[in-house]
Image 1 (cartoon, rainbow, N blue to C red):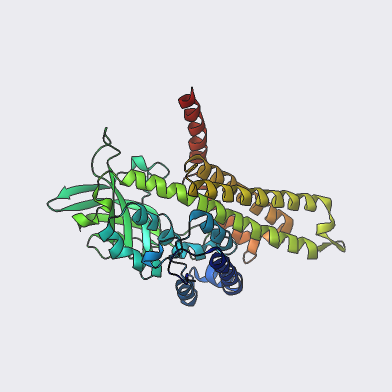
Image 2 (image 1 turned 180 degrees about the vertical axis):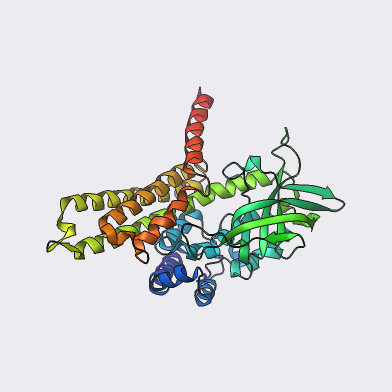
Length: 392
């Protein structure tokens, strides 16, 4: 999937990108969901096909080999990715999103030249190393340190729940260089190749769901990097870069949630139309119809909301409250839809290898990462109050 001109894709080209992505998801990945879950691994041939399609760089600029999709286009692909196992999207999510966007938005020209083309092609898997024990939804509390040492830096600390850590080639590492003061949060971000001495990746986490999407702890022990590893050449870019990348990512996660909810709904409608009780299709029962109606309403509302939030991000109308609103509503909605999907399926829905059972476990994580639902409520409510106070 590439633009014929080498520039950002045209409308016609983008429609083709979405069509190819949908075909890939539904004809290649979807039939192998059980294999992915059972092996806790996305097969190599699917990974290579995703690379060949340009999925590792669809949101990165064309000059670096990406498709240059903006967030409004990004969410259309995310709606498709969410329709299957979320392990697929996990392969390339950080390259396009929270890790790649740090480089695009804040990296020096030299840093972009060094990394972005390889990231866009999938030759490099970038990992976003922010979360720590005691510093997840609140990055300001992080304790990993970076200490100036001659013409470089020494990084010490431990991160956890780091997506793609077991296969990462590059860690985008957030570390404190000084206590917060009047000049800023004192948080910088560094580019640390995975092979750097002192970088230790722990075993894969054993999670409730999302089999095939690998996370792990990462320890940085006396890790020495040169000065050119400091993103943007500034010690005060880190907090701003983290907040911007996370806010953008929230809209993407919201779209994933809608895609997953749509799949749960489709599975439930198909089951209700065919499964019988006492010789009658359960979809004929009004209480089952009511559950399907609630599911459909949530999915449609979520799809409209996430598209509007993406539009506001692209226009720069709202890059703070709208992303949190979209993530809060869509991820909570996906959880409710998944629960109703299991209910529609009855005892069958509680069995492993049944699609709605997997979705039920997979979507639970969506309310936790990129900022919990509770954090989103604080951002939304606090933002509304502060805006009203400024207007007085």
